[in-house]
Structures are given as C-alpha cells and as structure tokens.
Amino acid sequence: MTSLNIYIDGKYFDEQNAKVSVFDHGLLYGDGIFEGIRAYHGRVFNLKEHIDRLFYSAKAILLTIPMSHEEMIRAVVATCRENQLRDGYVRLIVTRGVGGLGLNPKSLQESVGDYHRGQNSTLSAGDV
Image (cartoon, rainbow, N blue to C red; front, side, top):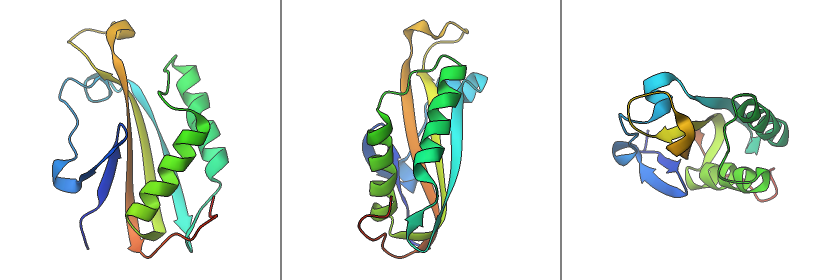
C-alpha cells in the first residue's frame, strides 16, 4: 500500500512525518473526540450526520473545533481525494491541543487530524 497523506491542522503530512506532540492533551489525558466514518464506492457515508455528531461531542466536553461544519466536510472530502480513497475508513480526531502537564485547558490550542485507510481509487466530484 502506498503512503497516506494525513491532514493535521490544515496541512498534509506523509505517514512518517505525521506527528502528535507528547504534550497533546488528547494523548496525555484523553481530552478530545473522534468520529469514525466509512467511504463506499467513492462516497463518504452520511458525512453531514457524522460531522454534526463530531460537533455535538465537542460541545459536550466544551471543546471548540477550530473550523466550521462546512470546512470540516471540505477537509474530509479533500483528504479522501488526496489519498484516492474509494472504499475505506476515515478517522477524524480533534484534541484540546498541546499544553503543559496539568488539567487546565484554558491555554491550549485545539488540533484537528484526519486519517484514512482503504482501497485506493478516486473520489468523484459531488460525493458529499
């Protein structure tokens, strides 16, 4: 399988260079959310509903997602296209971000990651 391009905070990284800080509160304290989504036949399944649920989850833990619903949808579709994903799995991860040791989240900057696994092919236009 070819190397995937991972979307992290608005940029793409190959698998070997996609890194999360050991000071990220998602890693240190589990302070974040995720959403698992499937793509079938070049279409991301129920994408709007999955993004809505991601935002509801963020609201439940008082986590601000640093992009709008529409920007998140565009990022998922763009990342699927970037990886030529036709059938596979998309994992969205939003964490509270990098900070020092301790549980005070007020000084942290949120982080967004998007990672995909699956069979390669192109996602066709209008597949949201």
